[in-house]
Image (cartoon, rainbow, N blue to C red; front, top):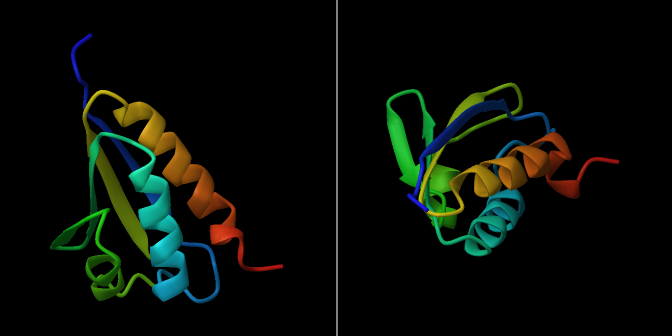
Length: 93
């Protein structure tokens, strides 16, 4: 089966945005997949495997990010990340 890229846009909905703890949860989720994941905000793109890179995006609440995955499980990776973002990184009560 050919690897196929997957893309999606998401709005950061948790109060603190993509800060250290949320970035760590994002990286943990990406680590479950073999696909390469890139996160883009504006002109800046970073690896979904880099906590520091994700934090440098300064994606606060309300920010739109683009997720791109390329690899054998790309659609599953994007789905898992969208679910994590929608769940507010399991932080806000």
